[in-house]
Image 1 (cartoon, rainbow, N blue to C red):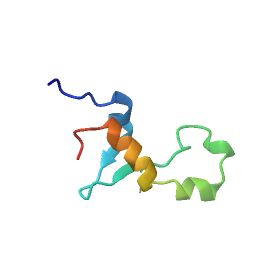
Image 2: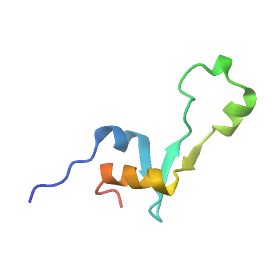
Image 3: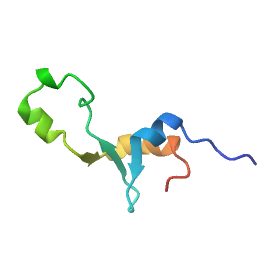
Length: 66
């Protein structure tokens, strides 16, 4: 039986926590900060945990990251 492949885009964007939740960087911070509010920039700092329904999709893309 061949190994399952990990989606290469998913392995760059998502990390798994020790409890199996999916960690992701905040969206909307790659460019265009001049038009964002200071509150948005402040709140989008760091990482966050995905909701369960979204995490379920990401876990299919990363079969060995558990």
